[in-house]
Length: 239
Image (tube, rainbow, N blue to C red):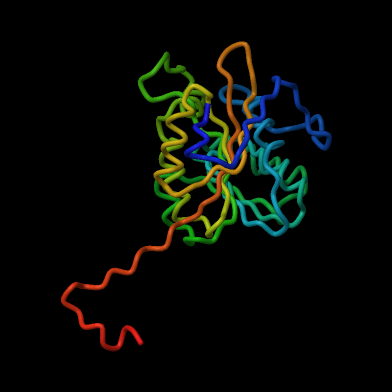
């Protein structure tokens, strides 16, 4: 459980696992025939996020584009940039954007997030979203299909890095939303605190095994203290 002394604001909502199906989705949705396909976690995260009008949103690890599709349908004024490293997933995502006539709202970039984030304008996003890999590198059996391995293990992308990049890319009071295993909660709390994020909302999805938590946190940088050299004269600095 979250220590209320460290994060006094949010109350954890407990929710039973449920099946979700966005009403607007047509029968056709482009996904790889083999390899990684979007999971219920993506739908849970998309339902959890409530974008505000005119938000500029950045997604790390876009997959086939399911979360941007849902958010763009929720709010027709948001603009979303999604970064995905795997070419087949990017191809599917771009087809889905065209299928649902959302090219004016969603842009997919085929890039490695580890370098792509540095090319983006700092402080220019109001929200960052991600359904990141859950499993630590070297933990558990690595899936032989590379798409699934990258999506599930912290091989090329990790929540730690995403939170660090978000400090640079979010405007003050910008939000970050993500889903992560409940058993790694302490790690998440430490990362958010270290990077000057404050929890806004947490929802736990109870499962028979491996429950998950949905997080929303706000970036609230503290102003740097003014340091006056000890040998400096006060003349010209104070009345």
